[in-house]
Image 1 (cartoon, rainbow, N blue to C red):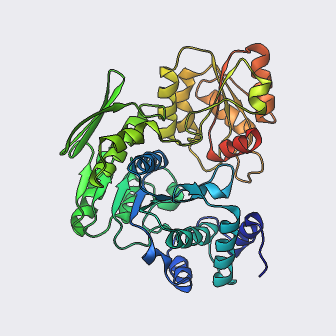
Image 2: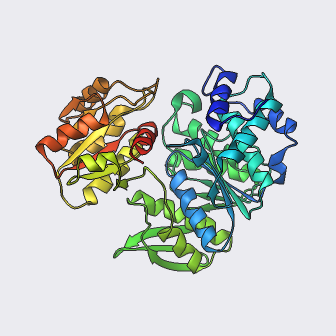
Length: 424
């Protein structure tokens, strides 16, 4: 097979399995065996699952480890602008040549046998990690945990479970306990697990799983505590108290994510300097990201433009809280969502923090919710809503009446990715 660009290979991989999501590990184990089991040759793994906050938590752990002088691999999904964002090798995004080579190799080893896009690309990431020296590997679960393609390690260094809430019910179950069971599937025998704040039903499942496997828990409210006091982040565990800058990532929910990251870092032996680096150096695109450059900014130079990819009810709550804490300014939402999401749950907390919502369809996304459906859902929760054929058209209409408005583009990581590609 001749060398191709990564985009061309990825497009071919999409055709290997008819379903986007089909949870099982059988196909992954088969391909990993054909690749000589790279998962057994990787730097120590820190495995993260959860409904909300695992990406931000991973970003802070990485910043802290790098603050210790460590080389860190990181795997996350989905990507926003380019697939390369999913695979970070020893601190740097994977190069085009390296990505094309490992995708090519995985495609050849798999042959024409059925495998999902996420499964085969995850195998490619593990292959790259195994062949590149580093001190740690951070792996973010794609969906669930128990049957996720990343769950192929008997003895990771550490596992982390961020807050669990209702999401992806069609794949993970229709109760919080069922969803927590899937997330707790990353807990391994004897391996410590950092646990963020959980509702009782989820915590009972996590504690029972850990007890059965003899996995020590480092749980919020029991083994570590975190709070905001006078503009500083206060963290305390059995090792003592830390007084740190607030996280660079905005929002009170990031205080909780920071706590989980700090609990993980302290378990790994991080000093105070590394913990401070976790707060000040973490970057995570499309999580209340202020847009400062590009065509959208050029078309609305007096406006304040923000981008956020949160898409479930918990994300709506967190986003509303961030907006409430910003300096007062007329705020308008441009929202595009997938048709698999709880749109009412997401929009309800945002109703009191915005003057209007403009519904848009996500460009080139087959599972987009039509803009008029999003606008109708916004109207149903008490928002003033309209539609526009594009984000640019929506922004033009908003600034025509309010040139200095705050505008938040939100509702989906897929919409956020489209904005970052077009506005980069």
